[in-house]
Length: 473
Image (cartoon, rainbow, N blue to C red; front, side, top):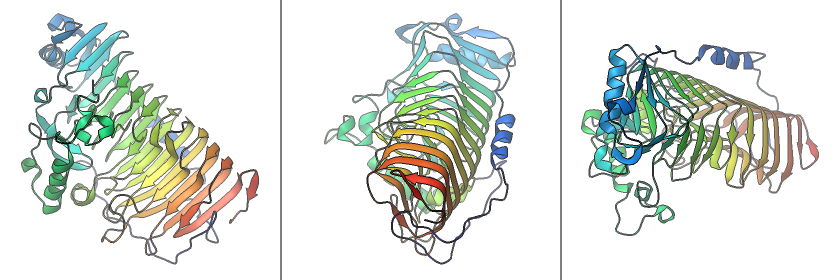
């Protein structure tokens, strides 16, 4: 598939291997191309601005919507959005009340404004969600429509102090995960066979137009998905009870997620997953999730190589990250490559938060993760490791597409309690390269670190359990 985003070749890493032991490292460290890479982060923040809209206002109640929680408002939302688009754009206003609806399709120059006291409650009937062109865990297909969806739109927004309720639970959507923890019982339908089928289609090169799922299949829809969009804003709203990934911009540019609250603890309930996107800012938001809080992605395996579009220029700042597998995560769907990721001024703490910075990949993903910068992060408690880089995730090694991971830089990180400071495992023939920690303090680490096949691991002014770690530990 082609588009306005440039294709990138994969970068392979080779060289001698250094690994093993507590806080192991290679002699010497990397030299940064820019003495202050945070200037790049500031440029990203300046570039990514909220879209502006005409002053036209269209109340969904004027198109037949009723905030009684039982009336199906799908047609009313669609009519209000179409009327707004015909006027050249503006605000589609959802006043206080609870509005039951099926999928909402945003159009260019339209802001869906959910007022304080308003809740959009999405139907739990799969038949309400006809298939659309989407990505499911990094593979393109036609599947149930995301609850709020846009395709090739410009200047779109979801704003306000209201709530988006996916109404997922142990009796709706979540059981399809196949997990008894989320309501699945033996004999119930579940996603496993459809997920296997979709991966086979991608590996076999089946055209996307023929990868049709939806009705009669069991791959859960996303909550919000702008697909191939430009100038996207999600601001102020609270998101609860999502079927799976909450905010999932795909192949989009200039995306701003600001002052959002995500509180959803179902399976695969990632908070925000920019995938194959350029210029993304996630700021002032709170994520309390059943999976990774923020997960940066770029396609998966064979389909990721076919599309081959990276994620780059991503800034995460001033956020609070609570429950979740990882705070700031890259992967595992990262085949198109990820670069220029910046995270600063973050607060994290939870016994259910596994790691602060988590990179997960394998030799089926291929691709690269380069130029990741994190600073000024305060962490109370972690369940596993402050920094995880795992080449053994999912399919693991033994396949022909070794990933390349390098230039990972962390400064001013304070962690209260963690099991490991570092849990990093590269491959002997594809080591992790150039990881630096500077001015970091880890008050209590209970276990010996795991560091395998790493080159250029450097510490400057780092203390663990009250003891300083040398410049080249």
